[in-house]
Length: 247
Image (cartoon, rainbow, N blue to C red; front, top):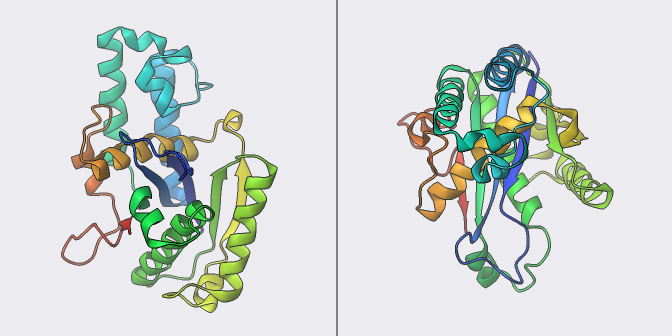
């Protein structure tokens, strides 16, 4: 059974001017089997049809929070609450794992002498490591993993492709190249306009994770529901497993 690893981020990669109200970069990974993704995709489409009457809407967390563009109808509180209730039921009832990294940018700058490159790559390395750990624990026939990320432009996409290929040759400090290649880790970079529900789901969950790390609150997604979906150890520990906060 093959798996997808959908990736999206919350926050920017810049380290020169760090927003004190949002001093993190969160990269959120949604690890999900092909069969379970078909269910998730259908549930999201059903919600789009219920609220907008069609499945062509592309969820975008920032526009939802600001009630802009297609989401201006959320100025009607009743409509907004119907959406939140429907989305939270998808968060709770669908079968997937969250594997996420939060980079605390001020601490990252303090730790490294030349920290101005590779923040996204560092976050991605942690996610790939933990994806390997998670799949190893399931002891199933070895699936192939396809990384699906939003295209951020040719040069940015190329940088990420090069980093993934580097990991497939050299591994990380905790996972060998052999173990990474065992799961394939092929990749695709797709535009938001392609309306990929898996990417939109990752986008919707990245912001609440960032708010959790910052120790603030996002009312649009019930984080207690999300907690149950993180990759965890046998005792239910989330941090260091499905949520890596670095440094």
